[in-house]
Amino acid sequence: MKRCAGILQQKTKEYTGDDTDRLGAFKAAAALQHTTPERALAGMLAKHIVSLYDMCFADSVSYEESVWDEKITDSLNYLFLLKAVVKEGNTNKQD
Image (cartoon, rainbow, N blue to C red):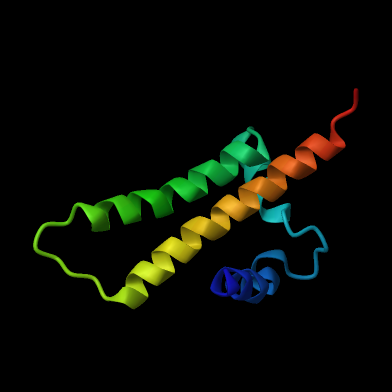
């Protein structure tokens, strides 16, 4: 979890620049794709899941622990970001 938090902090500036909205990249991707931020993020997450799936089913290939750590951390971080997008969406809904 500490690794996940560290990576998220490290990537904040790279993906958000000076924007205070840490979820802005997913909202921008959603606008480009004419979809929701959840769906845009899910598309980005799919890339990481497919990579993990490929690693799990690779025959006669052994990956170093650092490669597993990177792929798993990236996947977890996208899930944490999805939770934030969902939470923000629920907060912004009007009754």
